[in-house]
Amino acid sequence: MKKYECGPCGYVYDPAVGDPDNGVAPGTAFEDLPADWVCPICGAGKDEFKPVD
Image 1 (tube, rainbow, N blue to C red):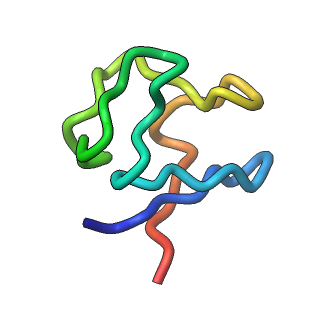
Image 2 (tube, one colour):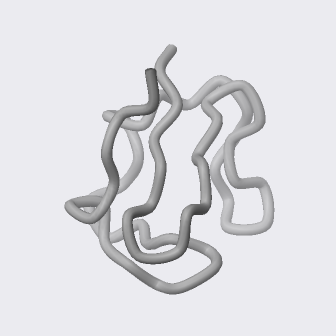
């Protein structure tokens, strides 16, 4: 699964880790995150994230 980086702050969402502090289990693909999920660091929406190669 691809990692995604937040444009505004550089936070990287890693599907292997998820976002347990915000109820996202490890193994959750970025595409499967809820539509209202936001960056846990800066609050940017999913549309601000880009895939990391």
